[in-house]
Image (cartoon, rainbow, N blue to C red):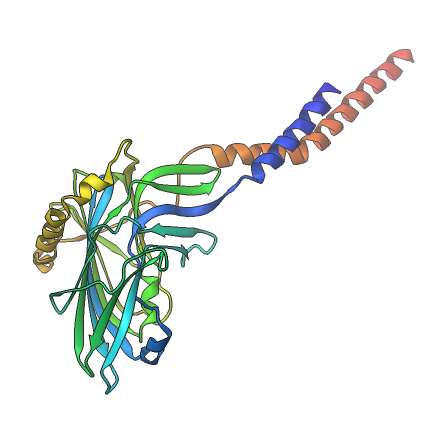
Length: 332
């Protein structure tokens, strides 16, 4: 009876654990948003503006990242288009490659965000506030048949991320660059180059990634790169990178006080002659995979709860029949 009681306890405990299984994915990661149309009066421009290309530069530090994006847009119409472009504070996106996993991208650390139109600083039309709690907004004029360059700089906190998979989780630094949202513009995006440099002596051995295509690494300058072409016709897989452990007592606001220093750092980085660097193809562990024994342990308890009682009853029956048989044999 005691054994039966213990197995019922296991079943109840297993059910309790199963109900608390976490949605897998990368949560609370620092990252990029995407420019999108926000105002109904601007819908006339929808799908008339093509993102021709993008060059993205990311410098990852322990606890944060500096980002610079150069975006080249073409107004494919014969009319001048003036639209308000929004850049989100945070979003939740499904993983394109692994549909059961979710990315929660938080860019609420966009302190000192700065935008430039054709290399001239652009004034923010609106900042996040009580009426607009999720968007930085610029107003941009796109002359007909011309290329307009939009550049954005920002710092983002990467220190609060958690990667979950079932009952296992890792607390890491994590950064996500959202490639899938490029499909909101007139397609295709003809080409894109993405460069990630690891600072603060971050070792590539401690890096995990999920990327839309093959990755290449320059060991001397600790630069990871990949390139895309003819994309944005549909939502594309995002670039996810996790590295290092969460830092205790990390003060991101202190970092933002030196934003101009980090913007200059990434400006210098973006002007390097990457074509002269030697890159070798590299395979890195999957950013969505985490360590730990939680899943295996719960799985064991789950199957033990399901099959344990029938097995126990079977064993009891076998022992009873065997004992009865021996007694009957002896009595003869």
